[in-house]
Length: 151
Image 1: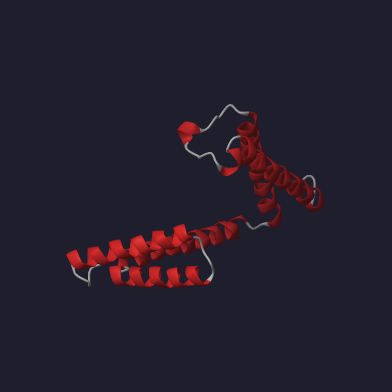
Image 2: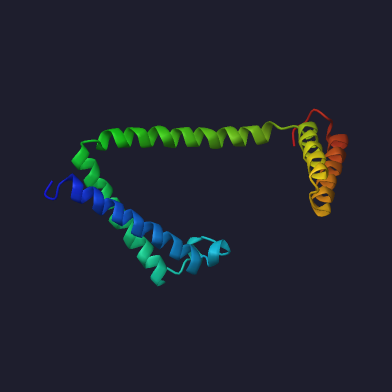
């Protein structure tokens, strides 16, 4: 490479810092500090913060490609990325399976544990009442459907 590792690694660090700033500015301005939603139809793709964010993403991607070339690690990065994506997909699937397999009785047990913890730690009365209502609804559902059925 023309510029060498020292210069390019420092440039990469600078571009990543600029991306960090752009993400934060977009979050503050366009997403109203997290109170706005990200949906394609609701994005103001012409806003200064959005355009800057996209430019900084491109700059970082360019620098990362240069770093992979310079360190001869493009294939290894791709391999590790795939492993990490598969692991995350597995976590999501497991979480979904766990939710689907929970029975009404298990849900009641979890809610009752939370209620006891909430009462012991002076959690708001609203939270406790909400959980009591959930427990009651689940108990009624169990009576209608049979206690062995899932939620």
